[in-house]
Image (cartoon, rainbow, N blue to C red; front, side):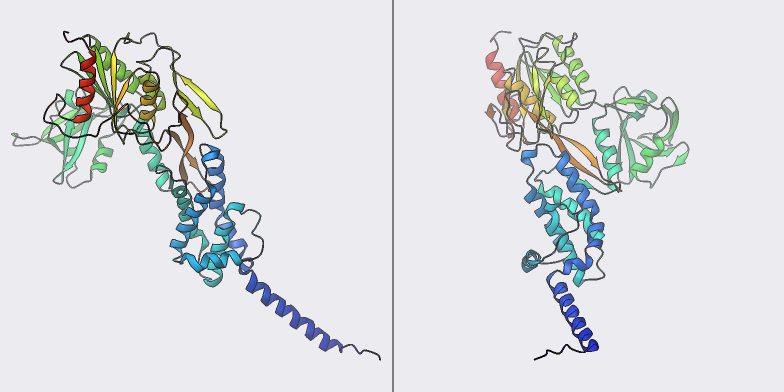
Length: 462
């Protein structure tokens, strides 16, 4: 029997029908392919951020990719207002290859955005990028890691750098907004004090222009200017019927981060509020002043110290340790540890016989933790207080191509003993919870226990 082939027009119709069916099946099994390029391109900043995290995050062994990706997915689903289940299950059933520029770890994120866009054609995937990156940083489990948009980054960078600078250009007065007025409190020895500004003076005009009703930052910007130039300030002063005018020269104002005093029993007290670029020199000056009174012991208070300059922390620690002593070990992304030692210092005071107690608490952070660990491990000091915060990483801004940035830990500190100063924090030798006390010199338990400890180690007659 001879088999007849379908006529040519009918054959073409059958082929066309088959193609249509196959196309329909392909669309139902892999919806992401119809929108593959657009989500991939719109999320390029996310892929870039992941690459930078993988390259820069301190300690390859501590990077939990699953948590980072989960953080990005969580923030993304919150943004597009989708319930995780069964949405995530549907993503897992999708077939088809992701574009080559999508990192393997983030394929599910790309699929989630592609699937959502397939059913919501007006959805713009680019709105996901910033939320996804913020979620990745949350997934690191590091409370200090943060994503900054292109508009936020410059201000954050300026603020952080200003936080560790040892000086600034100005007139040297604290500016306070009080009852819709700008009140000045000059620093000791500052140009403002030298010109005659008194604490509590109310600023009403700068350079003859009224500042009444202006915000504090607006006023500060008007007062600022080149070093050595002068500015006229009109001030309202208690007891004066009319405003007075003073001319104040602008200059470099040194920021104080160290305070000290002599307390009974031949014991000195040294408070380091944070580590600025000039903190090491200020510690030396404070110790030099205390040493004139032949102090026999010292309480170093670094409670609630947020850290700052690692160089300043090492310099301050170096006032109590010999040249070449190990300050700590710094480990970068490559896993290599660099030994950081105390630099030679011909001006170091002879404090070898000085008994030292260090006060720490849960807000003693980063460089302050490193200092405490170096003094504890060397046997040079005894620690009192509560376990420190547990964040001795060194952070940097990692910039992205659109002008945004991530603030990431790029290296980690190890104590001289080799202990990683991680989230477990540094434990003091004597655990003391801070409480007010009516007895004792300091009126507070942590200070009093340290004082009693030192006092008990010293000769009774001194």
